[in-house]
Length: 302
Length: 90
View 1 (cartoon, chains in turn blue, red):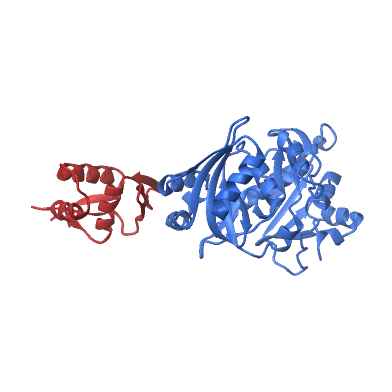
View 2 (cartoon, helix red, strand yellow; view 1 turned 60 degrees about the vertical axis):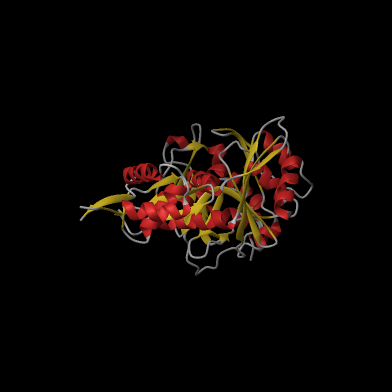
């Protein structure tokens, strides 16, 4: 059964009582929230996700709910909690859905150490994965959204999960995080693109999430072998540049993009070494999505 | 008295490519970027301890450069400062 098959009223009730459990890639999440914006956000962004069975082990129990006390009514706020702990300061209640997405990222990066986790978007075509590691502001998510609305499959917009045992990338095809100008750019990609409610005045500006393509969600159990690493950099009004990166330099750059490299020790080093060994590595700068798509298409078909 | 060199730990990670090498020291958790030659030297010590003279001979087979002895001493110094190798007096 998938989330879209639950009527809206039942979805709200399940969320209110913490009885919504989803399969999200290799993880099982239970989500609780009394907020209508979360219920609507889940219906918009997660309709194709399978529900976990009643007796399935849940990896992470999370909730986004109002804090106790007056802040329920006066300038309402929202807390993210994980297994009963509250790791962050509260945010305005209007940011409940983005906070859930950010919280899920935090939960994964802080607990899923059976993987080397890179801060990177990952897409796949013909069984081969393209990794796009980049800091915030580089245009990574916008480019990722453009690629998965063409002929690439979304593996992840934020977190490349590299399985330590075999180096394969495990999909976790959650909604694509967009901010500010990229929201309208992505909406304009096509009629099939679904972008959820935009949320203004967050710490990142205005944010919204794009629903992952149905096909990507349906194939979330299919890992992919890393084949390319491309470090993207969007520079307004810039022309396209593309240069091959040396493997040793790339490995050091990837160390800086990894969430848990230090924690994994030698296993993390070996996983990154194998990844770099297996991939063609480039850096591109671009001024618009069409340039970036063309460059990536050339690099990956060459 | 001869001066032997060895790794500080047996499980030091090393990956080499044409343009350079990367070493990982599990004890400190640090990742080090090395020249191809320094990486080659570290690779020799991963196979077992060696004297400076043995390193010079083995590296001389692959690395053609003037004043190799001085360069080897510099690389050993850099590697030892990174806690990748250490002297063993015998």
